[in-house]
Length: 200
Image (cartoon, rainbow, N blue to C red; front, side, top):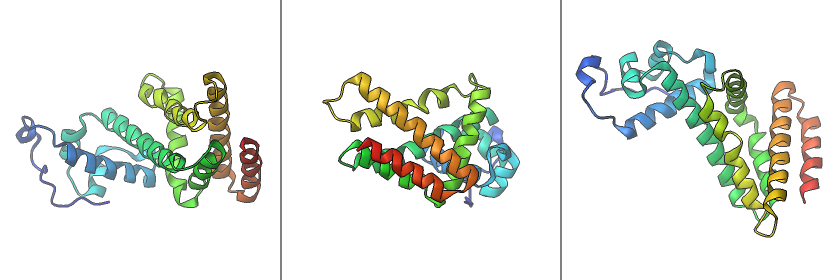
């Protein structure tokens, strides 16, 4: 994604006193996330990102602060994107089994492969540096956990709902990691179907 005619392409000193345009920042952040999905987490630095987006490095500094802050923003937005898509997919289904099946269908879609490869790359990095990526780790399980517990209905005890949601998250993510690593769709889909049938 290239962002042209950037109105912030001017010396940093001239921008220092200006308030942050949150809409503009959101547009840039989505563009940076798209770049990161395509190129990988290790390639996120000022100059290549700025060149790809058609803005100056100064613009990114003004919008995000430090490189670490930009990385944190990218991780947060990636997590929001995945959760939003997952939650929207699951929320329109009548029960847990149908909900998880819909989520698996979307997550295992080859068109989502790059996004989830980045997700697992970030997950691994976060586990190695938990203090740096504490926000990501705080939300990476709980976001979906809450949605899955709600999908089980009010008649299921909290303890049982949490247990089932935990198994669902671990199993779906494990199957997806296997699929991304091996590309063996027939085998993984067969195992996913067996798991999904057990939820019915």
